[in-house]
Image (cartoon, rainbow, N blue to C red; front, side, top):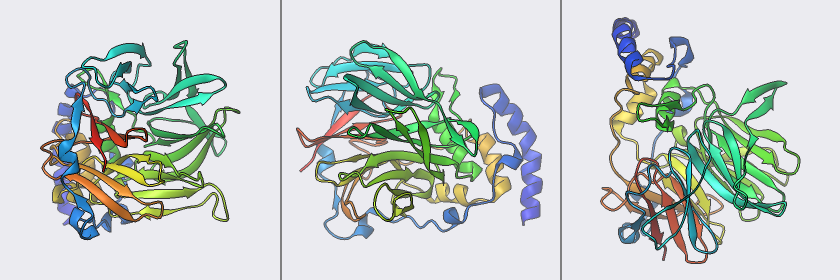
Length: 391
C-alpha cells in the first residue's frame, strides 16, 4: 500500500509544483521537511461539546452577540479594550485603529507594519503606556501610545549558542509587576508569506506547519527590564494563545494542532516544568484570556472534521503532496462559534457555542472586560470584531 502511495504522489508532484509556483510567493516544503506522523496526532480523540456533561453547553448567550465596526476593518485577529472604553483594533495589514465602542467608524492611529499583527496587549512600563504586539513577520513590537514611537522589542532568541529568529510571533500576555512578557512563536521555518491579496497569510503557514508533522513552536518570555528573551517551552505543535494565571504561578499556551493546552509552571516545586492542562478539545484552540475570577476563556477557531483528522494522520508522502495543494485550495471548515470557560485546574465550566455559526464563527482572539463582564472577540478572517455579554 505504501509503495503505491509513494508512486502516485511522485507522479502527481511535478504538475502540482508547477501550478503552485504560479500562484505562491513563498517556498513550500521539500519531501524531507515533512516528518512521519506524530504519535500524539495518531492518538487524537477530540471530544464533542455535549460530552462535557449536562448544563455545560450554552447555546443562548452567543445568540445575543453583536458585531462591531463591520465592514470597516479586515482581519482583526484580536481586540483590546482600554479602561476609558475605547477599543484598539489592528487589521491584517498592520494598521492600528482606536475608537469608541459605540462608534460605527474606526479612527486610524498608527501603523506597525509590514507584517501580520496577531495577539497584543497594553502594558504600563517605565512611565509609558505601550501597545505590545506580536507581529508574525517581525517578532514582538512596542508602540508608545503617547509618542507613537515604534520599536522592536525582540526578534530572536538564543538556543544552544545560536541566534534563532522568531518567525511566527502569535499571542501574548504580561506580568506587569515583574515586567515580563509571555508569548508564543507558533512554528519555526514556515513564516507567513505575502499572498496575492497583499497581506501576510498566517493561515497558509498554519496549514503548512500542520502538514509538516513537526512540532517546532515555542513559549517564550521577554524581560522588559533586561531585554532578555528566553525559551520556556519548545517542540509545541503550533503554539498559539497565551494567558497568565491570576496568581502568576503558571502560564497557559494553546497547542493548536494537538487540540490541547499546556501549562507551564513559573513558581513552586514544579517551576520550569510543564504538563498538559486539558486535551482532546472539541475544536482547535486559538486565543486565551483570563477573567478576574481566575477562570480562563478559550476561543475555538473551528472544529475538526473527519477530513481534517485524516489529513493530519495521513502518511508522510501524502501530507507532502497535500502541502503543495493546500495553499492553492484548502476546503473551508464548517462554521462554528465556540468559547470554552475553563477553571484554573482544567475543568470545563461552560461552553458558549453557536453550532452552525449563524451569529458568530471563526473566533480567534479574546479580551475580557471586567468593568462590563463582556467578552470581546477578534475574527482572523472577517471584517468585524464582536462582543458577548456574559451571564
